[in-house]
Figure 1: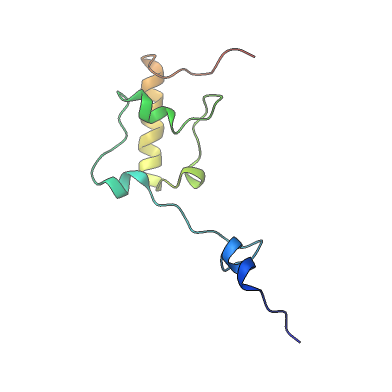
Figure 2: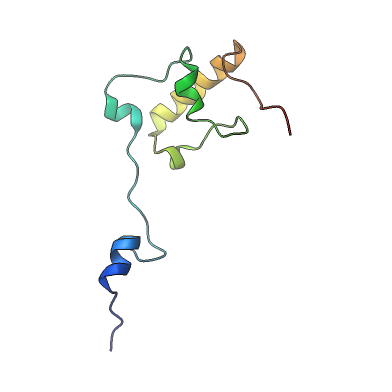
Length: 91
């Protein structure tokens, strides 16, 4: 007898089961059209930073490689003119 997945498990974890892959997130910048990451908008940049001030990887945010590189450059520029902190101080 072959093992058959029940419908609840398939709905909960997707077609791959418990160890399967989930659907990839779409790039936020590709979906919006021509809007590129801008270093002058720190509120948008902070949504791509962790609570420690590190840049969140593209595999987590779902950004494509082109826009992830542009985002990293925008964060670096914003840090240099003190719009976004390099690190978060305090313990």
